[in-house]
Length: 609
Image (cartoon, rainbow, N blue to C red; front, side, top):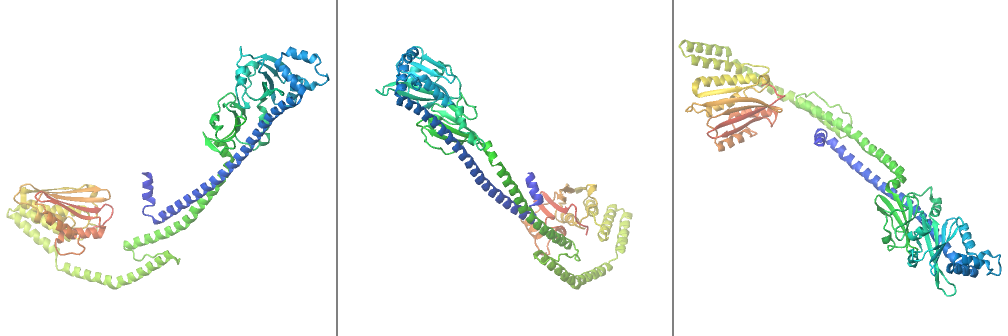
């Protein structure tokens, strides 16, 4: 409702403010729309650039993991290419560690100084060359035991038979080449570090191609982070490597080790595609995937929307600043010109109001030659011509009317009439006709009030004239007629038109009173309704036939006088001419019940006439 009030106060009747409002809205909406489109384009470009950096980092991680897988494959290949080493590995996998040591001690090889055939030395050299290797393990399918090599140069041979371990079942299962370390293997070697991933390759006999067991390598996941060093300054978000079962193999933020990763379902991702996925926005995250289905892992990169927004926050603020400046310029500059035109227009309106109230000497001071200036010049010229016309015609007619009025008034000597009525009144009283004397007195005072010229004629004066007139008929009809007048003293000095109520009362006495009744009544009530002072004259007389009432209303609204209903039409016409079409007189009547006439005066304007 407050918006409606502001609109009614400032825009409803103000053409220039409407123009300014419409133009401002169009400008603001246009600038905001263009700014938003530019912001979307720039932010999308920024997001794509950041995601491209992220994808490059993911590719670097994939290359690193693939290199580690290739290194394990090379380890196995080297084992097969070195016949002595391959024979020793087969011997170690098919015998106890004590037998293997005895085998070496017996001088099985011709060259005793060739340590390249020693399995323990060979695997120790591998671990020395690759610092990311955490554990090396050889599983023997025949003996169901496991040889474990640690970075601290410790060697253990563990019994993992099916009698007390699930490791044989685990080794028999087909699993992806790269995965998370198996729980039962972790338990057997007592290794629970979460940031590990495993690469497993089968070991076969080079002669018979019979499977001897499995070669299993545990890598530290921290090594994957080294592949991201070159992207550390530009990289946003985090990168996670997930196994086929959803285990976290690597986490750049170290937040998800040993937990379920919430943003990607790996089981579905492995069958989606094998290359870079299109960017998706899930759970307030930008998510990228790189799927390596043949190796059995998924690389996931995520960036929070808030973090990504920081990348284009500066551009956003710049666009907002430029848009604000453009909006202010687009609104204030036209507003300056429109307000200037509005001031000149209001000056012309104020001038026309002065002319409306009779100030024909007013002139518009506007020397410009635009449209408003031409209107001002034309109005000034029109007033000059109007003044000349008034001098030639209206003043001559007014003087003629004044001369005729003086002549008419000179024919009547009010003092002679007052004195004559007073003689008649005293004669009636001396003869005992006191009611006749009161009637003559009321008539004398009424006549005096009507003839007497008063500068300010008020509602109190009009009510007094009505009271005197009603007193005449109250005395005339004695007990069959009564009247009431309700007038708040606060309205006594309100200026009104002379004889604007008395003709209405006279109309009731002439046409409405019923002498055969004993309860004839007339009431006059004055009340204030908003900016209107309303007088209600209500009677219980004969009433008016609906057809006749329609004729009366039509006659009152005629622009030209037809000579009928002179009294009522005179009241209605004078009030409308003086105060406007919203004022005047309205009539309501019901046949046999009475008549209600309302007379409306302006509450703050008007002069007695």
